[in-house]
Image 1 (cartoon, rainbow, N blue to C red):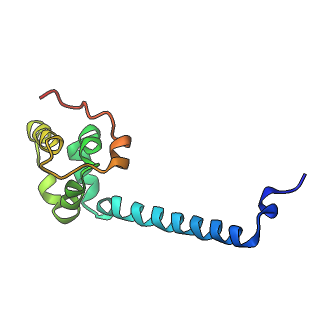
Image 2 (cartoon, rainbow, N blue to C red):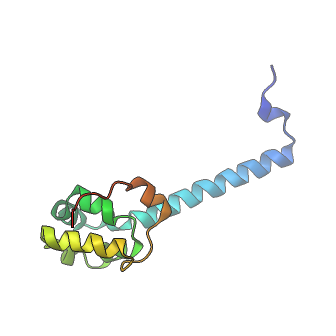
Length: 114
């Protein structure tokens, strides 16, 4: 039985390899931008203070992630009521539109009953 890859013409093989390389680069770049906030030394304190469900609910919003990158200290002191208010603001669109890919990951945003 012959290998299917070898049965393709070299132009098509080259096109497939170039497309795959572009996909790998795009994936790496998106990973860097989506998790840039997590590279800051203050991030563990923010994540601990907000809690898992709040981080999961707020993570899809790019403006929230930008705020986590630029002003992480302001997120270290919210209480539970303020956290639920921030989640409601995000759902209402005050923190921008959520990322489609990240929304699928954070599909269960039922941490607060406000």
